[in-house]
Image (tube, rainbow, N blue to C red):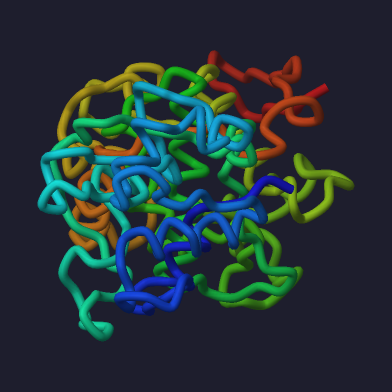
Amino acid sequence: MALNFDEFVITHNDRGYDIDGAYDAQCWDGYAEYCRWLGIPYAHCAYSGGVRDLWEHRSELGMLQYFDVVTSPRNGDVAIWTNAYGGGFGHIAMYYNGKYFGQNQGGIPYGIGACFNLVSLSAPDGGFLRPKKLAASSLAWIIPENTRPLTMAEMQNNAKCIWGYLHAKGWTLEATCAVLGNAQSESTLNPNRWEGDVPFCQPVSSRGFGLVQWTPWTNIRDYLGDAPIKDYGNLECQKLDEESRTGYSWIDKGYGMSYQQFRVSKATPEQLAQIFLINYERPADTNQSVRQTQARHWYDYLKGWAPVVPEGATGGTTERKLYMQIVNGIVIKCYPV
């Protein structure tokens, strides 16, 4: 399984590492710890004594055996500055959601250095190096075996999976975040979440399951079939996308927007979250402004992140043909075949 850089951030934030035993937690030590986590050798600053060497002498130092030079960064790419920071020695950190995660760039002191933290910096005047181990994919769903709410860190991971999947299907970030704002209230973005955390809950007709709590739960459980739990996330995103193309389960309550229009809309996340709530979720209590707030949160969180298709989103989860039962011009049932 490909490594997930989110895990590195979660496990290293506010912690300090002094790999070479000199000058405490410096930026080079942060890079070296990242290499250890990746399971690859780290290079030393053998020319000027500064981390600028890792960019200016990347070939001589053998770094291109383990890294590729890239121009458009994504999470986990190594950024190297030569002159902009570090007083002539340069600076090194890892790109993460439009910011940079590294050591000795403020944060909690660690000797004469500082622990890992996340800060805003200018684009590197050196460049970006992408670990070959992260090149294929660095995004995997977090889906517990048992029904439960997810933590915020777990929700952040799954929000990226949902955005990565739906972006590849042509959804806008605004529409995706409208779904996320609703799904956070419905399931905490856990594809294996039962309503009330009661598996196979009864009565079937009034209980839901999955990211958006499809009700009755048999609608989505029949769709998932015998798929393993690890595939639930991609399959449920696939169902959302299929529904958006057919209009299934969408009833326009006066907003003048079809499901097909919703998925490509550039209206605000707040507006679209309310439309999704009323036209798709249709709960008894429609006074839930928290869903709009959550949609904005996810928009602000994801807007600086380059979407990556999650692991397993190809092969076994390719689009399937649909059988639709239509009565009086309304799609009643929609099954994959």
